[in-house]
Length: 136
Image (cartoon, rainbow, N blue to C red; front, side, top):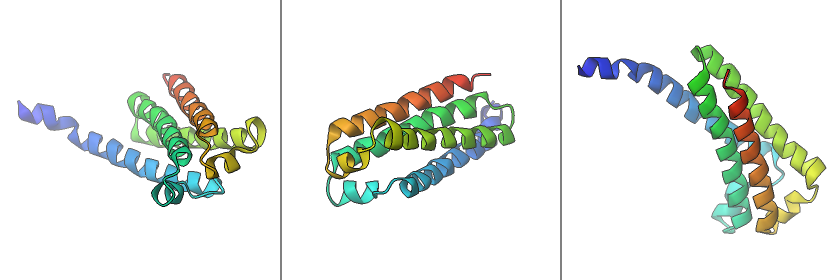
């Protein structure tokens, strides 16, 4: 019956809508954490490095967010793990910026794609690890 197929629609909409909102919140917090405006660099300057950087950050976060949605036992559990995923991704940028590659900001602002690929790779790697660790 179609009603059986649609019985999960409300939880889907709740988790999906919250996931989209979490992605927007992550993008805003990530932009506040970075000393440059990725969207402006991408839209106005056609900066490929900024596009790679923000793309990797969003992908890394979304990988962990998807795992949180899949493995959560309740909506509140999903919210907690989404916040943990967000914190891990923001911490990844801080580690790259201040420990691994202190000149990453100037590299991205100067459209140096190699540095952005490293940052994106770290973000995706942290997201994958984060997602795997959520499979409790």
